[in-house]
Image (cartoon, rainbow, N blue to C red):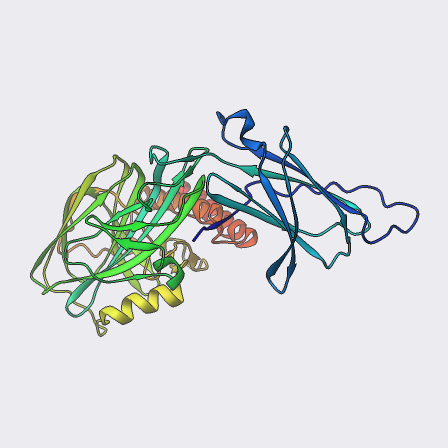
Length: 400
């Protein structure tokens, strides 16, 4: 079944001066222009495309007519009712992909001008990168629970269609179980492969986010977790629940403790990780907690249903500052690094952190805040408020 991809151009509404006389309601005209947004696309790619016009009624479309784009990619529909409550939708297909957009006539106007941007496709993943790969690791009574968020970026100007019906690839540990997605619709777009999982949707230019969760059996003695980066990755972030379990990794750097609500996490990270880089985590020791450990189902599913995409992260360095709704997963903030073993006795009080460490943490938090705002997780007012307070505290720290 074909997936409908929204038009990549915003509809260009040409607002003309209202005529001095009342116009007939069936004098509306849609003038359209098909453009190809891929730099080296064939010049004739916009020629001879069938464009269908629908009237949208109760979220379904009633086909009215269709036309063919001319030698310059233009198309035109005439004799349309211009009532502001009538929604028109036009669709066209190019290289097996259906593009579509909806609009109404501006009040008092009889001409609606639109631009429809199509793109070439590619089966190569050369333009696919991972801006950030976030992992959160929690402990249940007999399992390790992992949540992974991938922020992909198609940096090219073609739609990545993959091969053999799949596109983005994801690895899983051999003994992973109970794989769950943030919603059932996303889960329906995945198939199991030898590597782990594969996405079946086409990937347009820009950002695509994938969030999933799974469990791995852990008896409290020792576990070697092998993860991998199948694409070039800008930042890998790992948070491990601070439950007394020892963590060793040769690929990620330990970066201190991080607060997430009432919980604390060991923070590891790495930057500029090449594709196909193996990441190994050695866990040892039974998890300890004052509270009852969650079951695999409740910990994974409650987190995915109720708490994604954002969580409250307490910023103790800022005293009474509002909790920072910063990252996208349910149990903490995801940042990853390189190599090291967490000392058994390392549970420092954050109020004892030295000035240099405070400044470094504040700078990282400001950067994370910028990321959260850019990704639409915070509105502008909250972003400005938090940013101003953090920067004020940063200035105070430099003079402490």
